[in-house]
Length: 242
Image (cartoon, rainbow, N blue to C red; front, top):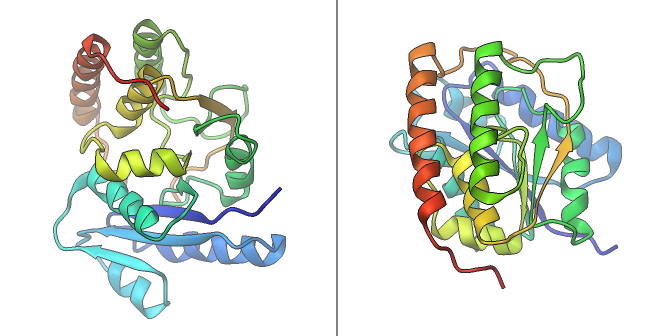
């Protein structure tokens, strides 16, 4: 199987406690497995020392002047991937939750042309590792049911940011990407367009340091707005892929 040009997109907001370890895990993985995953950190207007740490340690980074949020940061990564002719792009959080050891498993269905996008899922198998809070799992289940209603396909881990896409989806995402709630919305839109979306089982870790930006009131706000957005997507007609 021919080698593909692969980029790991790492959105980071105030990740001074985690970003160096995340980058070093990629370097160590490449050395151990003789892979050549490239990476780019998208520093989303951090107010801590995230940018300084990246520059001091020669970590490839794009510094955004203002905080764009997760959607804008990730789309910046897709634009970089598109402009630099990457064939596969993988989203990998900068907080240590996503394990680089699972990247090969996530990209395998793309390499074999079985899928256009692959989602690393915590909920396919019952594994005794970090799976987020009970309240959040209930919310994910509700979103999963709505996506099934809208598209006919069940997605278990609807909010997973550990995802890989092929070159066609890179082109699509660099042109148009939601600023808010990008994971469930883009998954639903791709399914509506009849792209092939697959989930593979992964384990995720708790944050290595720092504090998540998600709070309880934000979770409620998130749920209400995602449900409304998915209902709108469900009413739209999309051109089919290819």
